[in-house]
Length: 369
Image (cartoon, rainbow, N blue to C red; front, side):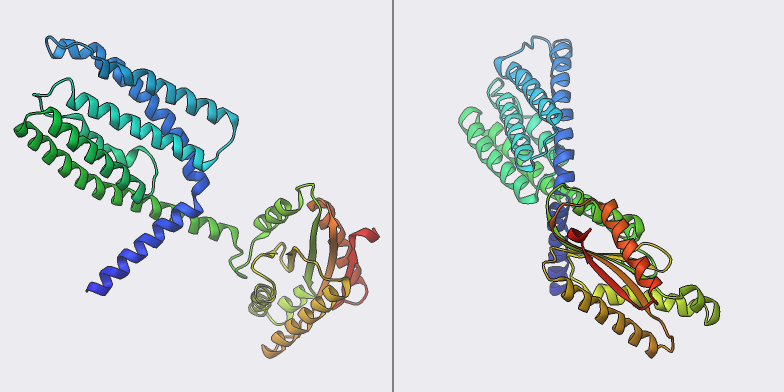
């Protein structure tokens, strides 16, 4: 039971850590929007508070503590809005502004709850504790540290300003709210991490070809385009692979044999190339591979392609299927090239390979074009 609990806690922590690492840009964007909403909403609520409170509490008047947060809230709204319009999304800058807003908000609430009314019970800090976990998307340790330091400052201020009985009551209420807020923070973070994990899984599945387990056409071409279309020199190789007589295999042996050939090709490509390479199925019997940061020679690439052809042929022979493939490859050595140009050239070399008798491989350097 104990080890199951430890395992559950470790899994939960790993899930949350993965969330903050993989979704850091998304979190920064959301926090910036939340900062705009929170600061503007606080300013509007303060104005409403100034208007209606005198009608509810007779003799109430605005104090300096009540007034100071209004310009501060407006300042945070202006800062966040101006930063949003710049288009920059530095997660450290955004997190820093959000933390500054929270510290300012807590300072305002403490000053309201403690100083103007030393004989009245505190009412705002416990409420802020409960709402705090939903204000921004922060790591649990960040939220705990802020609230813990706030609680210490609040307790010292209450003990110094209020009478002992009132101080004990306020500290008790704030501690209860603090503990409850930690539970709320855990639940909210878990829900956010679970939601991100589910969305990430669906996104990964939508990017993959269901039969081969590698990238589908759209995802593969987008990934290669993103790598190439930077107008900067790159070292890479683009391979275009086509299964020879695939339709004939489907018609004579059956679609199950054709599916097996596609599946084994996907497995072989995934096993042969590095995790940093981009591998995808871009047609019924066509595959594309981009070898990123490829610095070897044309002869080395040709040898690698030939080995790939032999291995695929041997694998399919073990399944009772005679199958070969043709490959057209473009080698880029420290040059800039668009995806469309690379695609056209690799496709051209593939056509030449198939026209020369199939089960062939043609590799060309870009600088020879």
